[in-house]
Amino acid sequence: MVFQLGSALLDACVLAVLDSQDAYGYVLTQSVKQVMDISESTLYPVLRRLQKDGLLSTYDQPFSGRLRRYYALTDAGRDKLNEYRAEWKAYTLRVNSLLYGGNNNDAL
Image 1 (tube, one colour):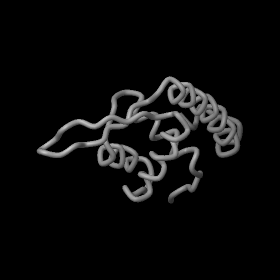
Image 2 (image 1 turned 180 degrees about the vertical axis):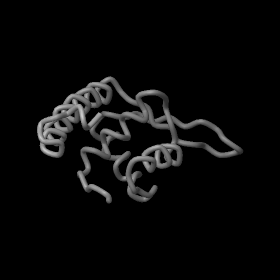
Image 3 (image 1 turned 180 degrees about the horizontal axis):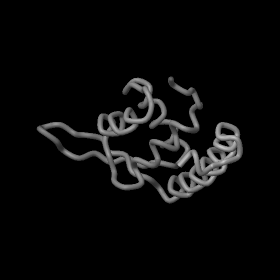
Image 4 (image 1 turned 90 degrees about the vertical axis):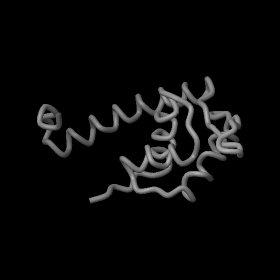
């Protein structure tokens, strides 16, 4: 079963991947694919929007005779990620309360 939770969750996952290290599009796609079904064609517009919003920066590095574009978190991106993490924690506690009848120990 797949839960559709919207673009904010995708944004949060992208920012979380970049929290540990800068990455290029293919690596980002593969990392996010571990938790949700996305394609590179879905991810690139998200990356452009996050960059436009000041949450990501980019730089190019040579690789096999061409340039590879890397994405990095900005300070604003790290702040937004922390906001998403707090919201996610509160959200999952509420959902777990419903799913497990108020006994969150069963959810762990």
